[in-house]
Image 1 (cartoon, rainbow, N blue to C red):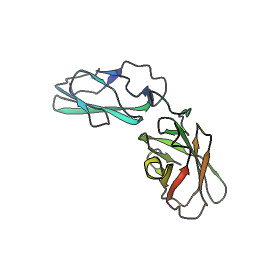
Image 2 (cartoon, helix red, strand yellow):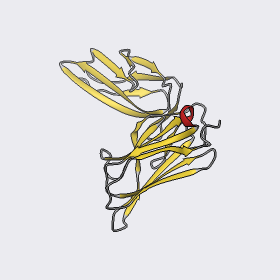
Image 3 (cartoon, rainbow, N blue to C red):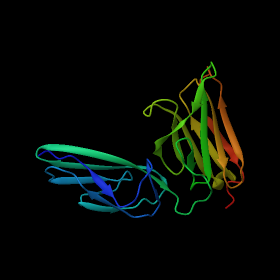
Length: 211
């Protein structure tokens, strides 16, 4: 019989994406049906395994897609699952949800509101892709990404945490970046009907270099 890829993980994941901590080792068990002669795990960080049960942990926060590909009986099948890796020792109090992106070990909380010229709009959704320093938002469909935002460590260069970003849209938006330690907020706006310009704020958070 051709294979049908499936796997289980030894952690309770009532939410999507599955939330784990950096450094937390997980066991991924192949539960595929059909004839399986070869399996390949890919963990989204460049590491792979061919074991039936693979153990893996991620060292850095961010979104990671685990892919299991099984081959047999002249066929191939693939299944995936997204994991949100959070800081093992959070630097702040940001709590991620469908509209809140947490960056730099959960110290910075980013939200985005958007609107059309007629005033209708909504809250942007977090795309399940990104790293500890950068992330993405969508306004509409899950595969139509609208905003890239980065919170970067510029402390060695000028003693500030930087905010950079870009959006290929002419919709209105307000990007709010909150330092959950100092409670400082920076807002970056675009007017509806105007082509968005890049964000390059190299003096965003002067207190961001403090522990």
